[in-house]
Length: 366
Image 1 (cartoon, rainbow, N blue to C red):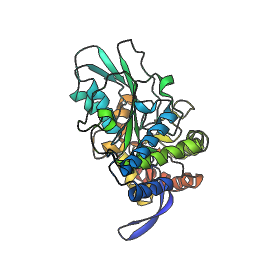
Image 2 (image 1 turned 60 degrees about the vertical axis):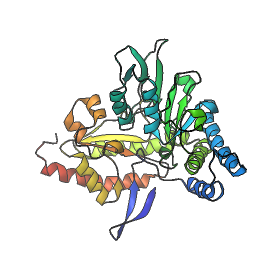
Image 3 (image 1 turned 180 degrees about the vertical axis):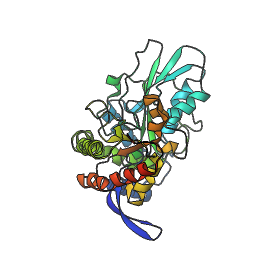
Image 4 (image 1 turned 90 degrees about the vertical axis):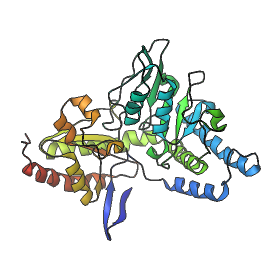
């Protein structure tokens, strides 16, 4: 969202939104599709009458488009409420078996594996393709014939080309709001023939794989977002235009702000093109975020799901082992609406913010 007027406490400012890894603003086409669905496809999609069939047609259209984008079959797609439910569903399937995950996984994997853990040899490996905090690309483990592989592709969809078969995946997770769709709808890819246990048990929806009334409006929004990704080949835009913005900001920060260091490997092929995680020595991350927020520059200190947790990021701790680095980090995440003017605005404000915080810190910046 570029330079949008935002009202807060009866005052306005021009916003530079650089928290797209948390949520991408709704695309205009998504908003339009959801309004039209509310008006015309309001019936329960499980009903046998014509309005129900029309609603189900929209759902099946979304299933087909997502399958096309990731190289899957439509019957391998299950709609969920989002990535957390999708991740929990996969972990639940392997209840009683040992599950191995990378140390950089999302909380919805970590916390779920605490509940559904076993004492046998690993049966499921869960490794995200790209990390949500640093954008770092992870290497998948080599599996034996008795094991299965799941990947949280929430950040990857729309940013890079995806083919679940070439990746060798048995399960994969997606969320609509990371590509300009609505919050509250996502999907799970389940390869035909692999183990599966429903997390939500109810009616016959999703061929008894996920009970509950269909979120037709949300799925229609998901469809519009997927169509935008497909029709515009957004992964090519990210690889060229958005990468240039990210790399320009990285170079400016390193050149102009003492005590700065990158937690993202910005070399092509090593990370997503839109995420930049930076640490600023002797400057606390949440303070940086709040100072930038007061200037209308919206960033994060890591995963939005961990907001309010005073513990250092488990991702940066796993990567660096340094709590100071983890506590002084900021994530800038670009979207398709960002321009070089946003980078320039950040560099108008950020050096002064860091200098101010470093001067009052008891930690030396170099």
